[in-house]
Image (tube, rainbow over all chains, first blue to last red; front, side):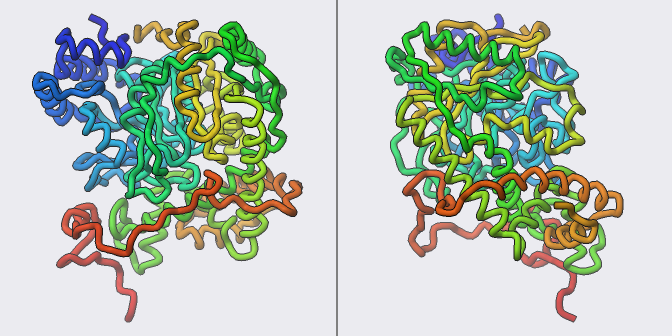
Length: 486
Length: 96
């Protein structure tokens, strides 16, 4: 039985009807990981023993009639979420020896819902990267073409879901780290509104931008997981105290009358023609389904990338100052004094991209440069948010490509940071403005998946997921599997 | 703008990173490229614009009551420490 092609809804129903147990499901996916992950490198840690124990517990809970929708469903967590008693590396040598003493709220909430965690997925080091090549644990390979990147930073989650090694996985998105890899491997991925999902226990990169989300084959799958992930948490001071809708029940919201704005700034120069054609075809599907489609302009949006590369490194240099070789993480041998301890522990523990971003941040925050860089960028950020706000007075959702083109070759951009950064040009705006956004598979360019992006106003996840679901009822791009993993 | 090697040495000290000569050359080159790229922000007219304080308009960082909410987990947390002695984190001598 090909359990790996079942949706979360089908897995939930199958568990309910006793067609298979959670232990059987867990064994099935663990075997699939053991067989197929060596070629992908999507997992940093596989947690077979604790997964099987959790699965047995889920089966008991279901037999007792106490199961929720997700009880017994296997998933994996990006290795940025603290998991008590298990290594939480954040893709870094710095934390290679770090065993989390507590669970992230996301991990705890999903465990309480009965979800079975199969392991921790590979990622760019400290989530800094767009290709998964900066991981201390090595690059992840794209299941559609092993010589290509799966995108990043949630590249392990993306590749694992695309190869159906796992039905869904968590991710985090600071500048596109859920949506860009989702697009490059042909799956769905949602970054919710800033503050919608707790950041407690999620290792911080840029705190005003970071948000946790879901990666799964379909928008419906994402709705299932997000419903149990989202919610207020007193332990995260930026968590928003607001009721969480049942995103699954809301999937049926009618599409007719939806006002969809095409982001004109992102449909021209720099966009590869075949990718543009796939996105246009997706827009045509919406038109056919009864949406009103208009062009919308956000003139400040092209400034997203330079703004991001001031704000994100500034916050990263501050957040990563906690890695000092004293309380946890890597420590150098025989430090001669305290400064030597700090400097060598950090130089040995952090990889080149992380070091570069820490230095960029240290510089833009330093005396004499703060106003010119950081304050300036925060002002431009206000302009970008205002552009979005104006757009959402005219339309319900914005649509644009997720990336300028399909997955690039491993090694192609790693030596040129600015070229690498420009890969996130279409995704960063939503982070700067705290908006929810998602990527959906919408076609292929030379055999490689292409994604279309939806961006909505704050807390419009229900609207966005239902619009995505309507599209996926009409198309089957999200069901396409790479031949070696079908 | 172009950064000098000396600038990068200064930044690396601020960031508490011990860099080799080879690293310094590499970062001087890539940081120069990054700052040249973000330089385009200086051309934007932001005269009357307030810097963003929170991604959600009207929201502010929540404060909690100044009361004890956590119990002591020192032993558990110190399991991750590279070097501890009698419940204390050990660092090189700071005061002679």
